[in-house]
Length: 354
Image (cartoon, rainbow, N blue to C red; front, side, top):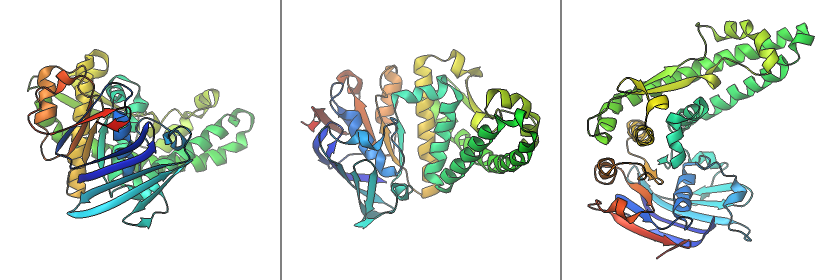
């Protein structure tokens, strides 16, 4: 997977931007609020996924304009592709001149792995962020998983709605049976996907995190269930009384977690900010390896403000030891890229390449 050219009009603060002739390592430089992250976000949207910044489609359009237009030329499987996005209140996509029914149809056509400053919270934040990471990663390589998560979430929402009235109407137990069986069925598939993905990650962690930490640290990952027992439907029946007071479903994949340990010590509680950022980066590099195993080629790697809070050794590893992957890195501090041995530097100021 390799990007040949990218252009956009009226996207965020990028009124008119066009860049081509990319290298394997591409560093996007500029001061804060100049448009560096906006460029990465524009590239990411061609994966068919939602913004890694949590933005709504309407927020992409340059203030006072009616729509944004983005174009991307890339090579996948040795074949050149041209994709386009038109954004108003929603996104519309086209691939090789053909309009797509949904933007999600781009999933699997253009693959990317993205790291943003908030990804450090994958390690230090709450379980929902770790679940979001793994679900997004799985959804990129197995688009059917996205529908599986949506259906599961819908069933949990239905149970939450019913459980609140359960104490006043015992006849609702029949409806609860239906949704709890649906939750249990979906949960079994989701957990299988997630555990299998964690095992794939663990195959790459020793080399990747060992490289980032110069061999000084070992990183382990483990999937943690939110309940005990093999049958989630039985567990949900047992928790009905407790759940009706909270109005929420207390067990299932939507409450599961992933634990990361550095040299046997939980990174969430005891890792430094630099270590947490390194763990998140390692997970993203593992994601790239997994995408390659499934699709046959590496995704494009998008790294937003990855250099801060990393020591020079780890910065050098990112700039010079990520091989075979086309990468785009944003950087505010020029001193952070002094060790760059080879690559393209793109300077952005006021939303334009200078």
